[in-house]
Image (cartoon, helix red, strand yellow):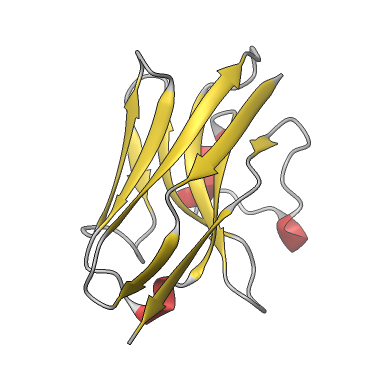
Length: 133
């Protein structure tokens, strides 16, 4: 079983930067991809970035060019560097581990009705990011 613990959220002015961290522990043979999702109040959970085991990186259009996903394999930590933050980036951010369909969700190729993601995916508890104008 994979356990994910996020940190690094907070409040920032529009145009500012934050870096989220996700400590990964445990193992699951079905977890070959890690990524970040976010959910704003009253909105559906949105996949924004993923990193596959082969190094393939995928971003949602809403964050491409502003956010960067990386993984420190030695520390087993996933990061999300967020630059040029906008008010609409305000959300709870979740670290997630899953299979390759995770990347397909972020690329817009696969969609789960009512956002009922596979039970085999692992989720962190979330960290809040608030961007003020």
